[in-house]
Length: 272
Ligand SMILES: Cc1cc2nc3c(=O)[nH]c(=O)nc-3n(C[C@H](O)[C@H](O)[C@H](O)COP(=O)(O)O)c2cc1C
Image 1 (cartoon, protein in one colour):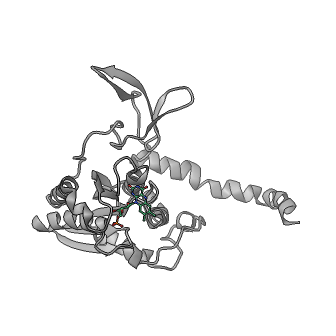
Image 2: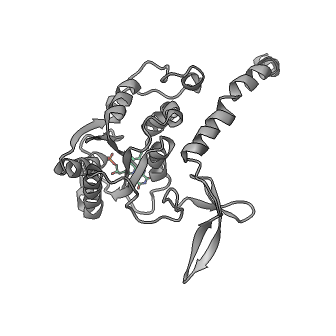
Image 3: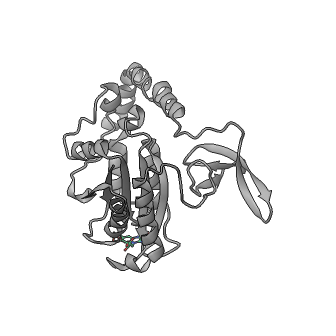
């Protein structure tokens, strides 16, 4: 069992590194081989949107160190990915990584591997979207999220005071090394992604924007609970993802080529 820990913080031995290391230490305790890498030590450029990875059926054509990291992901049996919270989001390096692995979401080559999502912020209430952005790494690759952990600490190292997050990261790493592959965190509002990003759409209908699940609010005891419509399927299920790529994205090459000349003509007004 080989567990790869990735930190997206620039701060060496900062709070994200520390929580990721707690998970790796837990995994090592159970006999796993562990590897720690810092995303900022890799040059991973922004996705160019060329879609060669799909249309030409090969890994991303940009020649940078994504390929090194992809090799490590392929070799890993489980992945811990952590990010600091910056302006209520994960770091840009996380988004670069997620977009550059677009093809792997389609091939499903990393699917099923267990993952732990970690974010660290300075102050409760300022978490924003960060954990969801890290979760999207796992969801889009159809990996199996076993926990999502938010820790707190402002200065580098202060997350040691958040003993709950440290212990949870360590326990998550242990569980991963023991072969646990189902979600072990607290139940979120959405039963599919275990997140709380359920929004009310224009018609007032609740909808998990991560999973594209519609439902209704149902009163259970003192609380209102999100009840998905019968036969709901998360957009991250194998069948749904395959349909998304095969019915929408891959055919878009042909439909774009048919309109290319007309689009070029329309662009003329901006060029003159
Ligand atoms: C540019 C910047 C923006 C930040 N924005 C937030 C924020 O929106 N919410 C929050 O809780 N913490 C915020 N923080 C605090 C960091 O998340 C916190 O210091 C964290 O421990 C950093 O993790 P690290 O030590 O792994 O880099 C911000 C820090 C920086 C540098």
